[in-house]
View 1 (tube, rainbow over the protein chains, first blue to last red):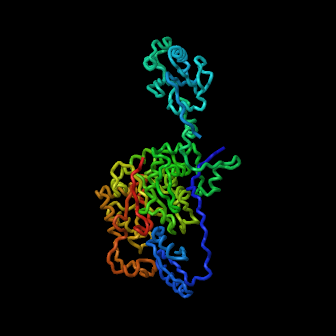
View 2 (view 1 turned 30 degrees about the vertical axis):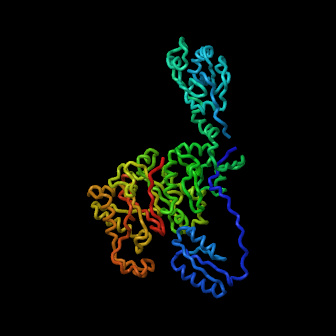
View 3 (view 1 turned 45 degrees about the vertical axis):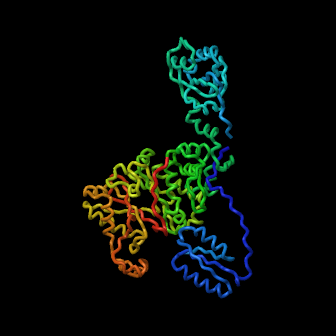
Length: 91
Length: 481
């Protein structure tokens, strides 16, 4: 029988439970991460307005460049300060 | 799978095979030794040979393999479990010296050469290596069903790059690992986008799949190290919408030793080393790193180079040095430069015979890298063909002069490059309009390589991805053997 070796990383995907989706955003801290694409900040400003209007407490974050993953410290900061994160990829 | 290496007993040990005429010739000597000393005979092929004295059948070739028997007959003297000395073939004085027994084989000719041991038979070696050293391999083993085609299964599981790959059997991967002295379990790099620690073994698997020969493996390993770091930013390069990929520019005597092509059609198809070394890196990023088009790889168009793009500079004949030299590698040292770049574009100039005219041609062509109105953000490698290089060389222009002259001819007033100028919305943002004269390329952003066939007044431009912290910096590494 032919055998071949697995060419992949063989990582098993970590199973994580999602936190229950909140009924409302009022009173929650929502994080918005700017990936530093041009004019992304303008778009996020508008999102911030709309979230504030429904009673959310918005925190803004920015990563140095869109071409590299967010620094570990920044990810930790977001995770500890926010209850909800909006993450979107755009161009 | 493997067990402890078999020991051989103290005294005299001889390894033979019936198929070897010299082994047949020395049978009387074996009988003499059996009478005079503690003798153990191992037979590789026929258990009935020599018959007298009786032999142990080394059927699996475990004894032969583990005791490095390359020739039969081999005579070994063993004291307290350790080999003290050996001799190969039949040579009376040597056999008498090793055994301490005189008058051996008086009727025999004084010497006869031996034959190849079955344990070094090229048809058997891969299988033996897998049998006796297979447990150095840590990757999961996948059984291929009888009814399953092993080429098709690589496609079905998403491990191919659109072209068939060589199934990475343990035998092939162990043979590939012979190309490096590094331990298979050594971690080479952290591969994006999944940021996985990747071992030498996993690189060897990718190299097998790409179609590499074992002697290419050090180049593949070096390319993986050069690409998978923050400076080169393989991660961003993989994800971008731009049509770019890691391009390997190799140089040094080792490129010639492994048969890379730096001459006619060097950037094209047909040369195994050129075609497979770059492909191995991309297969690794796909399968170990998890980077695939339609997923994290967002390239709008991509380019043919994304299957793999690797070529050798003809640094032995270059009149202006080599790219690796620009990045601090000493002459004569094998090196790989990895550059984030797109497909090639021709510099067509069949008329220029003086260097100034040719430099202006290069400058004109280079202005269009990415967009004529964008400057400084993109690097480029110019692969200068021999007929163009000769024009510069005959004028006595070295590397620095060539680059300075070409870049000098790209200088324009930034005000002419601003968004909206010439009815073109793209260009420099308005605030840059006042900075005065700007060249197309930043310092160090215009790089030269020497490759191509001897006929043809052409060169090739390889435009780059975004440079600097936001993008990628070229990385050069000496090949780590």
